[in-house]
Image 1 (tube, rainbow, N blue to C red):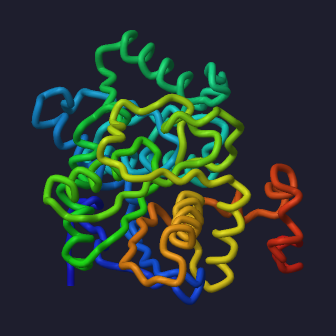
Image 2 (spheres, one colour):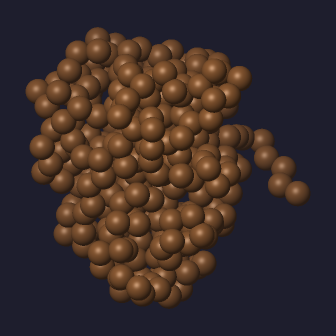
Length: 329
């Protein structure tokens, strides 16, 4: 029986779902949502905060500030609350309302930046707001998840070795690309440990992380409108871009089998299934994908009929949403 004193001390790191019966492809899904922050971002948040404290950049009088579309903001809210620190999350209108409510419940201050950057996204505006805030008051400490090496080190030291232990014959690893912390940490680990694992990055259509053309994106999590400084494509073997309609179809397909996952997971699973069909048709490679979060925080968006009708109305007939869900029963 685990007994903990800090919420970040608990994290299920060895739970996998065999998705073969759901997507008809050989794929194990590593579930990273079973902790008090509800996502893989708890690992990076803890590593960045602990490093800032060791280095003396973060003290009892500091105010943590970070740009986040949701999951890292929740993780930092949780850690700040456990340490008695203040935290300001700078987000944008795409952030799930549930994620904002969770952050505020944990005592964080949430500020929404609605100005779009040159690529039509919000990331540039969020980062500019954070920089201005730090310049205005020395109490603010920006951890900068987009360039902080402790982001990827958390996964180099934790996530990747955990996968390696469970799957010593691993052939393919699929990792979603947001800040690319999880991606780069896992990719560096397998490369530097001479493991012959094909690393496939899964990104959203409309993201510029790997040189894509910027387009509208409605599902928060994966993808960026400004290339993260952590990206090093020399560690990545292939990239798959997934359109948001495919993300939504996939999460609903998973939910129809009892697995309620978040949008980032839908993107990763959709990309992995397509890649495996193209590269290993009829074969049975050992393949793992990382599921960053669960689906409860998406109940107001990708699982909500009104939101879907507004943004992806053409998909509704494909999703076969029950009448009870449409009526809000």
